[in-house]
Length: 402
Image 1 (spheres, rainbow, N blue to C red):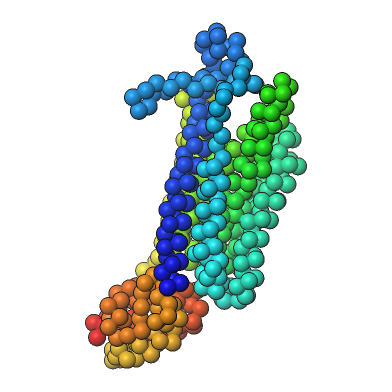
Image 2 (image 1 turned 180 degrees about the vertical axis):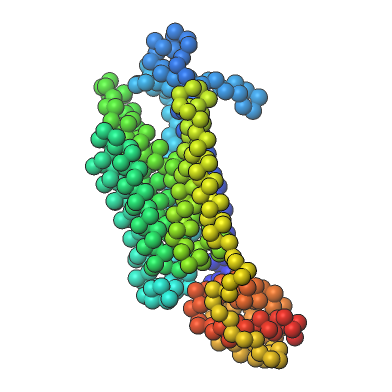
């Protein structure tokens, strides 16, 4: 029953998380596009009102004319829309999903004894530490360096070093699948913290100043814009890290931290292309195609580097297949010892049960795929399945799973 309820919680939280993430990323991308596409107003009345940029657009059968004020608008409207619940709900649903999927089953999903054989409590504490410490160090970099001359470039370089270091450390400490997800959650936490700690508070101070008839301190707008720009470059790296758990060839690679860093770098470079593309259309900067090209080249280089070589032996040497195909009784003995903790009468992870001959035959294809081909199961080989046992399961399946 616990497994069944956790599956439902996982499904509903994942659904909510994707919906709110689409809303957050969509609004973020739209405002980056809007800010990059504004042109000087032509109407004299708009200029007198303090409008610094405008955009004409057509969508859904209607025409839209958003404008941006350089400072305070002549009058605050009765209803002012704030963009923050998309961010907060994305983070809350994502953290809940991380808790249900990984922290709740730390022994299975977080811990790889071959990397770090620690207790579930220690692994969970380290995971939370990644989220908190990265935000503290990132925020410190922005506070100390961000307002200096050429500060944006220095902040970008230091944050990149910080991300690389965190990626390497996560891949040394945690199971590969979890390491990628933790790095993604770490950056996503920083994105939402930017909204909660800087962007929204700064905007509230600006609105309060306008209502009090006081001049707006431009530092709030400057910092809010800086953190918002950081968030847009974080977006594609985070999306890759979150999706990677479905593709074991990425996080199971011997040098998985390089795969993670390479793909995140490619995502940031491709995002830079889209950010500058709007300015290029208006003649403000050079064509940003080189950024997209760099991102694509990095992805192609990773593809070539990671490609399996048919001339080389498998990474993990397989034991010699037995002369005669094992009987189902022999395979059942292996499964009873190595698999029933998660697929027995009491617990059926993913609704897979392997504690009878009939259920083992019914799931023979899945067992072969997960145990012999992809070698994903047992998760992080937590039950110590041997190479000889994998070979015997493979031989049994190849002989017809009789």
